[in-house]
Structures are given as C-alpha cells and as structure tokens.
Length: 68
Image (cartoon, rainbow, N blue to C red; front, side, top):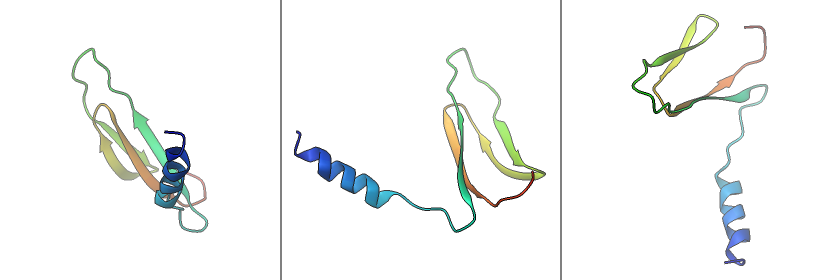
C-alpha cells in the first residue's frame, strides 16, 4: 500500500486545474441537513446568478478581481 501513495499523489496533481490568469477558483459548499428537505439556495455574484445549490452540493466558478 505504501508504494501506491506516490502514484496516487501524482495522479491527483495531474488532475488539478489552474484558474485563468488574474482569476480565482471560488468554491461554495452547502452541507446536507438531515432534518428535512430545504429549499434550493440561489447563489449570486453581485447581481449575476451563478447557480442553484440543493442540499449537499457545491458550486465552483472563476471570479475576476474587483469589488462585488
């Protein structure tokens, strides 16, 4: 098993993506809440709709620098 760790790390590093220059990857997570169904959550950047998050999901987008 110890011999597989370097291969696993190499595989994960090869799968990583870099954001375009002058931008950042933004991840927004929403936990799953086992109490009951919750309404979907709309996610905005300023006035622009980025996506809709149901329970237990995440959203990733590239953000340009500047005020929001």
